Image (tube, rainbow, N blue to C red; front, top):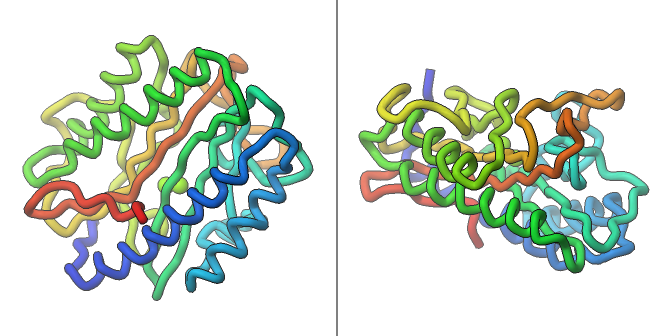
Length: 248
Ligand code: MG
Ligand code: MG
């Protein structure tokens, strides 16, 4: 069942989203060659607590960190650690924050120094696919319209959309119904209504869409070793259209 949120609940989620967004900003500013992914996690942890939020991922199903940090062919759910970012890498940072029991969830992929044209284009296309999907987040549109918007932008660019992981409803839990696939047929699926809040999160591979999990039980990588990018926003459906909650 899809839970609808009141304007008061959405206002609290906006605060969670604001902290999520500012965390991604400070982490992004810290992304330079030589920094470890663990150091990025520490920056996020300190920032979230100082801002009055709680990290949403820490302890979630046993996840051991504040951020998911996924480098190059890592798609999602990378565990921060001793790995040092190097010039030319791309790094996907996923962050969740809780304020007064409500969740915000957002992700961005950052370049580490100068990156290849392919890496830059992959990031640009993934971000554009998210923007196209958000534009469909209005009453009367359907989840198939949202997923189709992502898929169209991505596939026209020659890239592929990950199938095994999808976006989701969000509110008093990080993952609520419905699932929000990044693919689909326009005009199909659940119809969007004011009060729905969803996390839209295209995961886009430069190669094929197949992925696999590493032995750490968390990290998801592309099956063919190609680069992957990930952008996510938490979006409320309002009578006036989409309201992106994960902005500062
Ligand atoms: Mg996320
Ligand atoms: Mg999410």
